[in-house]
Length: 323
Image: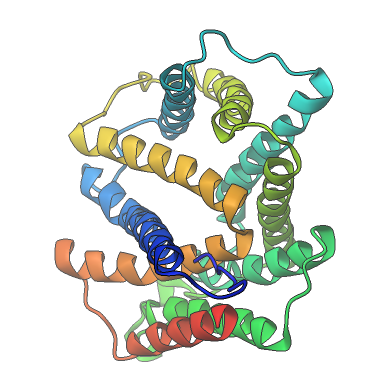
């Protein structure tokens, strides 16, 4: 969602170009929402006896490799015969997003020991607030009161959607041995706050780097994903001693997940370069609804009566923020 301000009288050609731009961005953002929303249902489809059959670290590494390969091919198609050389001071900043995203991916795993998945799903919406605060503070972007309200509604939409998906039962029907369904420790709450802060910092920092350097996006992606491959490669090497092979359990669906997530990463670079990290939050929020619809259509899960509420809140938030 890119806002194009009107400057002077609009000519028919200018109006046509503006609408073409909006359609292009609408298609791009819609595709991202679809890819984001289909990620979890597709992973569910790959499960064998309730377990994911492939190595998660190898899958992440393959996604980074795919993004790096596409970045290299885009340079070739633009006529470049060699990889552009930049001073280390221009290349080094691209290592930080790779470190931050790797840290966040590991935090997601660690946090599961200190809270239940539903609590994590609800509290992870705090990254909307952290991203907005860092976006305003670090990038010097002043948000109107209506925009802050819109982001609050976006957080509420995520909370309502997460709450509506909880498997709440009558306490009398819950087996005593199961224990409490919702729980979070003090350490878990601290980790959630760290996760939200790192998530917001990663998005805002990446946007700052992409916009501050006058380099083609394909070159910037090349630097980003070189570090991504290196760091995730080291992470993958740490699991070499496991019984599971590097490509063991890969199927057509898994390769589809890799292709989709690679495409989404490249499209997100376009959004951060020419749009904003706030637009990314709206994409992620809308993808929750697509996730629910695909889970209903593909996996047979039931939608709850509360489902229209987050839909309405996200629509109202988008209207308030971008009007």
